Length: 441
Image 1 (cartoon, one colour):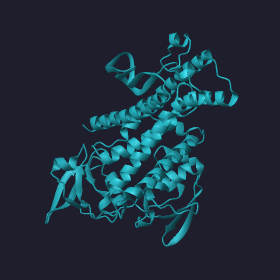
Image 2 (tube, one colour):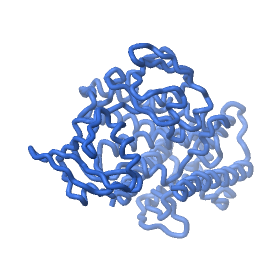
Image 3 (cartoon, rainbow, N blue to C red):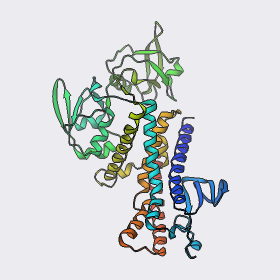
Image 4 (tube, rainbow, N blue to C red):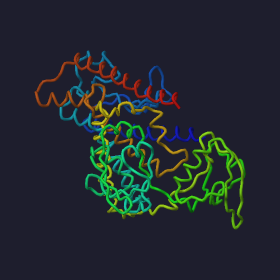
């Protein structure tokens, strides 16, 4: 059921983003009296799932969920309609319009994606505000893994600054280190400041999810708020609302101590010491082969989170700022992707990776946050100067505007084919990465 909910959220989010993107092209084309022959959500090779005609445009839903398209008369696009291009240009065709109008039509999709993201961020801030963990409120310090220890970090370290800059939001620390090529972390350890150099050799591992820096949580209070799919604790009779106070009669100060203790109890019998209402209980059962009890706690109960509320007029500039910040951060990631030292290209993912970022339960706030983020990604990807993408058309149109010469239809046709081959290869690569990662699990 969890996977089905993730798939449904992914398809709905993709549908919203694609429709808005294609609407941008459609409306700009209509503004300049350019005929749009088709407006499709998803691609429809050989047949469509649904279609109808209104005026000069056929609207429909295809069966191949790889995006969508509008077919604009007199334009060399993925339809590769050679017959139309061999006829004399008509006044309503794309090729008959001035270059500046054609440029705006091609930029329409990307512009609408960015507008959608800003509208969503603004609405989210107005409706829910922002809730985050300030770095200064991580009062028990951090907890990290073996790679973090190799880098020089220690459990309990309190992060003071990164390259001398204080990071307001704890969740931004790792992205700041990766995207801004930071060189040094200053931590407070045992009452003194310690400088930790960030060796770039660790960056490829951090990109892959190692070297995590998480807020250290106290063990108590530990109230069970839910159960995982595989839960020996639930089978043994533990209930939501039970308070876990120890394992095998041992009490822990921090949550990581409890996790480390269970790591030595993989598949072994343990005794869960719990309090139910006012009764103390000891329940015996075996952990999973990974050393898990299969219980869930709500970390927000022990984290000192900060909530910021926005009025209607305050949410507009805050939403614009959030949109542009997301754009800037995503653009910085391209430097990592194309760097052989970071090997970030190995972490690229396709539909499985994107779908997995959606939660396993339907959460509208999280859904619209991810839709805004993916809308920006789609906008940036589409503006890349690759033939077959909007950015490829924009690149050739800019050349025409600057030089006064239009590339030949034959050249544009060959460029379109080359771009489609490149995109197909990229699609195979990123989805192949997904499959390889699944097989390695």
